[in-house]
Length: 250
Image 1 (cartoon, rainbow, N blue to C red):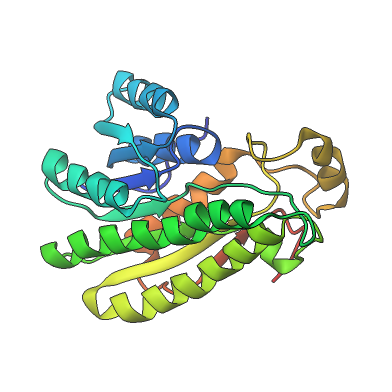
Image 2 (cartoon, helix red, strand yellow):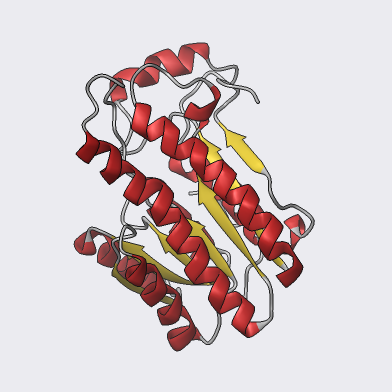
């Protein structure tokens, strides 16, 4: 694993979708950087495993089951951060739901399920974190996890690509509203990453076509998150950071 390169000591960060893939790797990186982490995921066994790993390495950590489509869960996660560690400085809204259905095959139920997690869930995460940050008066940094799919919108995944593009509008709106409170809001848009949400069969094609000639790993997404959480990005807000090896360039 890569060594931590940003100092987040003394901060507290809540992370949804922390039970695996990008979310769990980012949680470990944030903890290695010195932050206390408060983790949520729909799969409680997975998020407890991440919690145990971070705790065994000496990190300050708490976790709970979180269904981001239920706004009460995001509120509970933010309040857990304050109750356990006394403050909330950062939020990473990682939780997501993938759908590969087309405009002709996507059912209303599938559309709603994707929107409930990706778009509404991100809204609920941002809102819950921002309210705690405003109450404390210390500012903060919030990161929404979109996708590089918004740059090319393939014919499959209509609900998924729509939700991820909507997240960017949500992020910009939140950045404008929360900036006067000292809260920065940005987005990370990963490309194809070796994670449970991507198809291994697509990896060779990505490695062949991307300028960097490789598929991304979850830790490739963790580095940008650390930057956006850190004081080094104190003048960055309303920005989308595309992390895809150059496969799709904004």
